[in-house]
Image 1 (tube, rainbow, N blue to C red):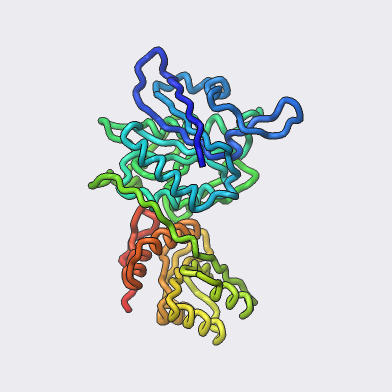
Image 2 (cartoon, rainbow, N blue to C red):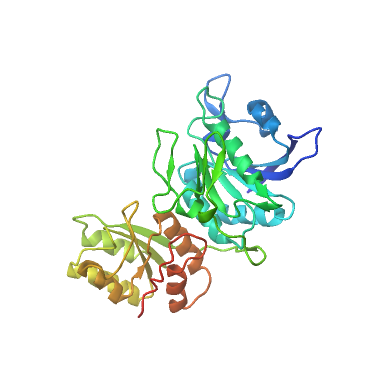
Amino acid sequence: MKFLKVNINTAAPRDPEASILLIYTGGTIGMVSDKQDEHLVPFDFSEVIHRVPEMRQFKVMLTVLSLDPPIDSSNIGVEHWVKLAQVIQVNYQEYDGFVILHGTDTMAYSASALSFLLENLGKPVIFTGAQVPIGRMRTDARRNLITALEIASAHRMGKPLVPEVCIFFNTLLLRGNRSTKVESRHFNAFHSGKYAPLAKAGIDIEYNQTVILDPPAGPLRVYGELESQVAVLKLFPGINEAVVKAILNAKGLKGLVLETFGAGNAPTYPWFLKLLRDAVKRGLTILNVSQCEEGEVNQGQYETSKYLKDMGVIGGSDLSTEAAVTKLMFVLAQNLSKEEIAEALQNDLRGELTNRNLLEKR
């Protein structure tokens, strides 16, 4: 995995007020139509000023790293997340903020993963992308890119306004590990139903400082491992034993995100409970999250979730599926005991869940 590097001084000949590292991984935002056959191809980021002339109004020193070759976000994996974290680590002291251009389909997963890999993050890491390629007339790419750069550059009294991993899209700045893609045909592609936006962009960018993470107390720590042997099991009425058994008995499986109904409820079929109970006894970590976009797991509130709590399934509070998957990958890679894993999954690490002191007593 390699990157091509381009240096651009949008402030020239003035002195830059901030330095931003722009990382292009792939996706619609960096695509233009080929002149010969009208197919979409990645554009040359050395010409980004010509594509987005509004950037000349910024007083920033901009460095562009472009993944060579770019990849569709459907092909993003654990190795890419670890590499992005390492790139930020290597360049952390040199830049005031980071903007990552990424395909929209898996952006919420990537932003969640980066949030866990980057502990004590004190600078903005802003993901953005586009629904329409930058070369098209009605593109949203220019607006998203310009606003993401502005947010990554924003500071007050020498301190960044948003020291965390976020997604900016359309008009909203969302915490990365609270975000979910909800649209494929409209510009408001991302939603954060369980947490308020960190900022709204209109004529001005209005920051909601009450919901933005506080600056870290310690130095940046970057983790280099994630456990990829995890799976997601989404429950549905009529789910059968063979399907559940196949997933729970998958070779090498270490963690499972169980998408349940409502407040964490699941069927009470004897075969279903036995399969889950046996899997927990074998050492499988099962994390319970709600299928409801604005739902929250409260295991034990109903009888249909009390069984899960009693057998050792871990309640995920208001975690999104994207945050649950990547947090499970992160926690399982830390060589923790069973009790420490349960505690870490139920505690708020990076603002990914509402800390209601719901740590379940066993």
